[in-house]
Amino acid sequence: MNRFIIACVALLAVGVCSCSKKPDRLPVATVKGSVTFDGKPAAGAMLVFHPLSGAAAEAKLRPVAAVQDDGSFEAHTYDHKDGLPAGEYAVTVHWLKPSGKGSEEEGGAVSRIPARYEKPETSGLKVVVGTGPGEPQQLVLTR
Image (tube, one colour):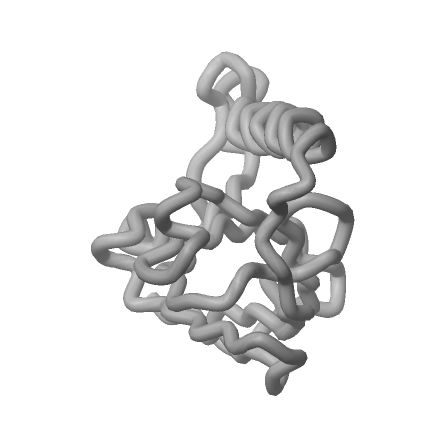
């Protein structure tokens, strides 16, 4: 397991633990969709949602989603697949493959996608979430 995924899981666990004690969780709406890279499912990629507006930005939340084998994802903030608070998000994508030069923990992994997708300022991927379930999000990555 690479360091990024471990860090995301750890942050999510801390967020869930700290939020589960507070009655002031933000309401969330289901956010589903798919991710493709050059027309194929981005199976195994990790998405991070960086709030640009709304209460989620004020709370400094970083919801995540794992991309499944078919390219689908379902985002979560507090609990597994619970959704996202209303607002606008920049989406980053992290998707590694072994480089053949040691383990992923030793830096033996390289990104499968262009580096621009790993920063909220350059990914170009945006999601707007309302207060109810929305249309499935189609995130299309290209070279």
